[in-house]
Image (cartoon, rainbow, N blue to C red; front, side, top):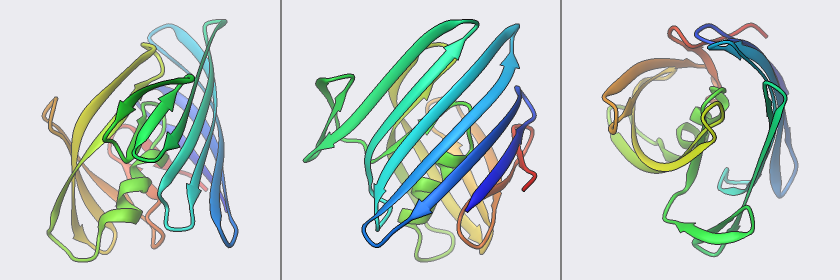
Length: 178
C-alpha cells in the first residue's frame, strides 16, 4: 500500500509505503518540506509485529543540511534509543512531521465507540531535535473519525481515517492526496 500526504501547516509531501507479511508490518516513508525557514528531508522506517505492536524505528533527517538520526529498538518492556537503554513505559511513537504515527494507536486500541483511550507516547520533534514522553488521548467518534487530544498541551483535532485507520484528513495539518 502507498499513501501520499500533503502537509498544510508545514509545506511538505510524504510518500509512505506499508508492507505486511505473515509476521510483520514494515513502514518506509520519505518526507520533504520546509517550515520556519528550514528545509528538511526525513526518512523513517517503522517495524511492527502482525498485531501492530511497535518493535523498532529509525529516523534519518536532514534539517537545513544538518543530519540527525535516531534509532529505537524494543527490549522486553524497555527501549534502547540510540543504543542507550533509557526509555520505558511507552507503546507508541509520534513523529512530528507525519500523520502516519496517529494510525498506530488507532489500529491497536479500539473495539467500541466513545471510549477514551489514554496512551504514553514517545514524541519525536524532528525540527527541534527533541524526544519526550507525552500523554495522548484518542476517542473513536464513529467508523472513520477519532478525537485526538494531547493532554500536555490542550491541543485537539478530529482525525478522519479510512477503513484501515490511516489518516485522510488531519485538520489544518495533513491531507491525504493518494
